[in-house]
Image 1 (tube, one colour):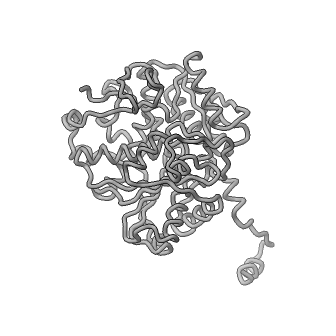
Image 2 (image 1 turned 120 degrees about the vertical axis):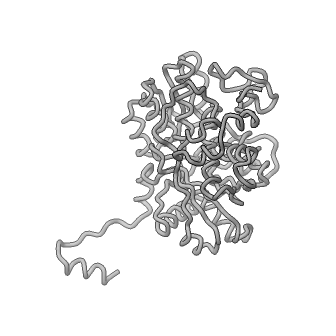
Image 3 (image 1 turned 135 degrees about the horizontal axis):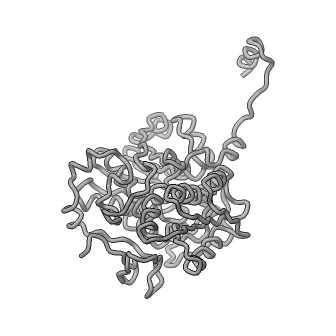
Length: 409
């Protein structure tokens, strides 16, 4: 077997990694990259990996890019795994951590997949890249396309993208197109037009995106001293990130680089919860939400393209998916900011909101090792943060005025 193969997740057909392809030519299902563990062990040194600078490309032997290919990187990855003692005390937990991917170059976890996706695009000789996005993907793709000197076209739902994310895509020079519809409709246009217009799609249906995102799982294990957490709480939108984390944990364990595997708890907003609904009711096929609606714009997706991968990951881990309300998401966002100094966008607080819900219901071991994934920085969506906070007070420029305000509470 080659070091890597691209296979259909259903029928197993092997596809050519040397050309743009996003779905199985036989059955139309998603594709995934399979790594030959024995070949990986030949190429890598466990001691060398541990000594390297922490980033996505620390794990290059485990990423399906030719050694001869130039890597396009903004030093993404290597994000902090914060041990949250005050938050743990508040919730009555013993070992609580937050993996904060909001400190990536463009402020979200998307950079992990995009450095690999753009590098692969250049390897394939592509000139133009494209995506549909609720915000973070467009910001990330635009930045990396600029770095690689490629044209970039992003499609976003009209009026449904936070200004912080829209500003990034525009500043990086992408052609930003608003679609009169939701994310799912924008993605449909992207997929149908990509071949005709010669554009390389870098949504998470592209399996090379997942290969970058799986490195977050590697990092968590390294940061926990060579062990997986007992539970991973993660927001679920399009489903690629939860599948990527699970792929990272599985591969790392198979290589003898970590001990154990976590149970995955996928968290969706009540107004956009097709995966949670599917698992709750034991459905075999996902039923899309036609009009997804939630304050957490990054997971406002009604028909997740990666639902088969994320459902399989959750089931294989022995986990499940659940929903949280917008008010629970915003409450968790404030709690994380005020107790731990971590400012995440609403979607990035969904995992914590789900954990708090489980704690309140008594459905989790309070002594377990728990990691909540926070996917993006709060400055991505400042309007939501401002609307949920007290307005600044106005005083005269004097000590007496300040003292009076503070005494009055």
